[in-house]
Image (tube, rainbow, N blue to C red; front, side, top):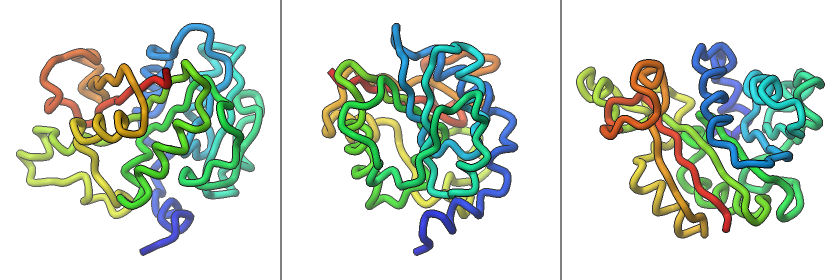
Length: 209
């Protein structure tokens, strides 16, 4: 089992994902009113945070990543701080953030660490805060037709069926849990098309109430 820093360094194309900016615009679409503090988990070198900041200059964005070199390259105009650490033990106090976002991140966690991460996100969120994440959709019809799997990518060490993830979020304590379409198909169908299997990724959202 590779350590997370080693595993993350295998993701040589992660910051060249052409959908990253659209993914963070989708996050912005679902931000609650009056949000100020945001934690970007798996922030990489900050392409997503730059999008959020461009849409709302008042956001105070912190980035968490396990690769220290990435944090040193975070754009200072977008991120107020870079936090070196793991999502299983976020080095921040309880009830620190209004929102936590994690774009295409959770599939890079070993299954044993998924619940730990969800619990840590719940801990660092303020009451009334919101968690937004996207992850590849194992039920994507295109993958099924091609005989492909989320796990075909060597850096993906877990996969997340939306119904199971909803239950995990509920068991941790999240409420008002919703799932919407994401990925490139959302360019044409939007987020709300009722057949989730047409999307390559999905967005899951839960509130701490």
